[in-house]
Image (cartoon, rainbow, N blue to C red):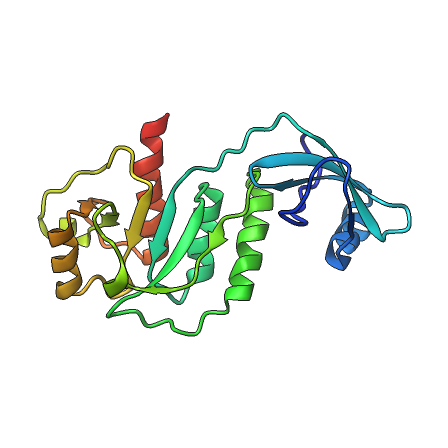
Length: 221
């Protein structure tokens, strides 16, 4: 269904239900796209939908045959100055959930998480996925179970030989802009976490997240 707008309305939708129409959706459909039909989605499913003639309600139609391209990856990351870019790219790559992690070198402490939620919704609409990733409450690195985590290990840039993929991984950890601290590296190494190489250069955190996701998901093809 090319060229039909995709708009996320709510996670509580099913064929035949009627929902109040959000004002921003009404404006977009009537004044930008100049139409009343669109696609909506939630929880892995996509539906046809129609805006009522009086612009007050949305009627959800049938479920389409479009499969959700999302994956099962949870991305754990230190909040950074460009958290919006990180979430945007990772959402487009199909990430299921985000977990902000407070680390020793985390410097971005005042993130507008409501704005971040809007960014992942817009990225979900644009990227043809049928679900919006969940943004979990921030956790401290010291409180995490690190045993089944794959992490982007910048030590490969300094000569350490590391694998480039981790088969079956569903949890990826990205460090802060200043990198993992020595104590954090020690905790990761001692826990059995798997460090993977992202190449011989030091990447910005938002790019490191995208590369790490691709290193995991490409092996699924």
